[in-house]
Image (cartoon, rainbow, N blue to C red; front, side, top):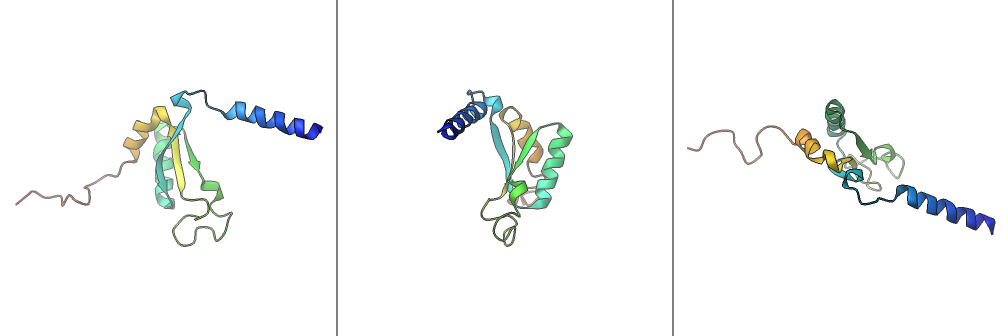
Amino acid sequence: MWAVIVIAILLLAAFCLFSSDGKDEDKFITVLRTGNQGQIAIAKSLLDEAGIPYIAKGEGVQDLFGAGRIGGGYNYITGPVEIQVRASDESEALDLLKPEGPSPKDDGGEAA
């Protein structure tokens, strides 16, 4: 009986600790989702340099389940790694992580 009460109290405490009070700056937004280890390393480097705190969600569990990263560069059970930043840092992080150079539709030259 006591074990059930203790578990209920711990669950309630965890819920209160991790529940959001509606503040947008406490929410984390995914700014990059990829299985490419090179892109993950570059994104982390750019965010570190800019002083933007981030979470690499799913990075630590890629090789723990099933066949690991075989096939698509990420574990199909856990999904690709997601780089997440605070909502208040979203626009700055997206600016840092946007691809450089001409878009695939742009041939880089002038119209004839």
